[in-house]
Image 1 (cartoon, helix red, strand yellow):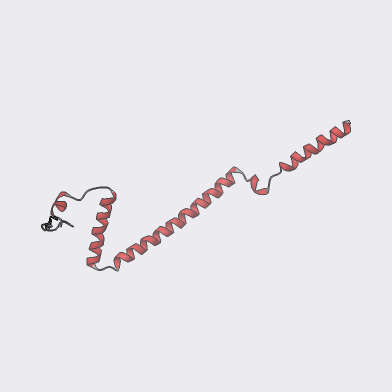
Image 2: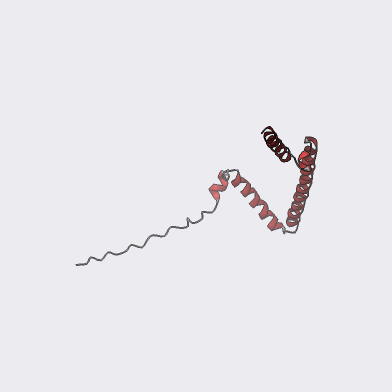
Length: 118
């Protein structure tokens, strides 16, 4: 009886030891994890900087190939977009003297004749 209890306790103890084993990657120290994280972040920053630089070159090239009239129109559109995004109204004098859209000369409405039916 004592031997059977001892064998059962031994088996239960060995199972716990077998489950507590960890793989080789789980024993990384905190310093190595931080180092790996810093390297990944540095790579990400370099890639992002390259992408932004490429986008900037594309925008500059796009601006450079435009004619003078188109470039000035682009500049005005950009100013207007920035103002709209910051929720600012147009300057008072611009609003006062702008063309009225959709508010043309009012024409009198035609009066419909009502015919009385008997």
